[in-house]
Length: 589
Image (cartoon, rainbow, N blue to C red; front, side, top):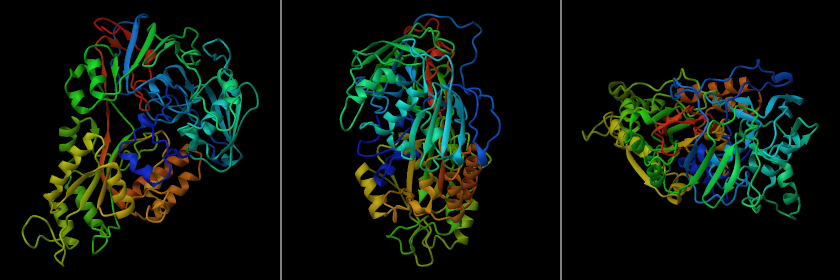
């Protein structure tokens, strides 16, 4: 499932327009898909000129992986996976009409997010360099990489792929290329990308899209007059080529069969074949895994994960956030906001029992004390932590701020008798764990004197409340993130939804230091400079508290007992199917 067709993904990785930002309660990295082309690689980008970076680091080890087996990997067998979806009718890479697991099985990107840090790492491109002050990017492709028909991968393939992503009428990611002007193959192995202005996220959020064969699609593409799209290509009659570890052997409406690509430029897959079936129902997918007909299952809910043998559950880091942003401009309040005084915001944070909801809602599969919304490990400041619960300290802060329980009902009032009763709004289709967190937070904050109400709203009502009426006090979100930082419009004052209809910033948050950090991020293509800017942003928005931080949920992945070699990947947890091998008693093999 992708963003609605009437919304566009910008080059920074966000959907365009105010309604789109309300979708973040259900928008997931695994749903957006376009930024999660993954694999284990080496290296880090380095910028030319004034934005030069440090040398090439080594790839991070995968975390939370299945322990290394005593036996060596064995070839053979068929891996079976069940994935979300209704059909496999349209494999247009730009449209993202099918589950990304299918795409990642046979196609690969030039640049891959590191499996642990999400930093850009060489993949089909062996190196890259920024030139002209960040307005030109030169990527050098690996030698010896071939398509599944034996023809060589060239820079023309990459240039064609990026052109399609930019121009395809069905492209879900055309906005990623809004600042890019040209894609030029200056030799078989060198691609030059030129930009109209600096694009801080292009390397992380566009270069990580998989590339596809120009020879296979160019005639079909160029024969179309006017608006063009690869969506009408006959995928069943002309099985798509790739450079990845799996090669297409058969494709039907609801399933794909791929076989090991023996000439793969890396270690070939251990299994002989990979079969992927689509199933729209989450419960139905879980049942398929329970019967042994899917080697892996992801995503899964905490309820599903807690219902199976712990030995089958892998808990892995995820670029995922939960929080509730303060509204500083509620027209229903005489003062405009409960949160103008920082002490009230701090009191709310201190009253939260994060350890309790971590255990009760997530089975402790969450970093509940992680502060902020920058969950990408390459940019996250792990030294910033939300506080342990301290109700007495919270009560003291509220009293200092003038909130006293005058009438003895448990809810504090100001000097005029106006009660401290904040309303939290959340979309009804948000991930279910968010509802569990909010219910517990409401109870926690009552102990300090807050009378919290939680309103679960339909998508339309949610949009109307935060964009138009603005009659709420906290707005709760849960979503997954892409490798590049795209939430600058959540904090930046110029993206205040009251003044900027294409903005987000739901509560009218204003902090000049936060704005300066955002500007520093957007004005750099250097990962080190971006990291410094984002860590400053995290410090500022934690000191001048932007919202209530609920932490970073982890992903649960279910692995059949007879499946060995699983290594999670933070950008797409189940991407590394070629590293799996099968032993009894896995019935699916």
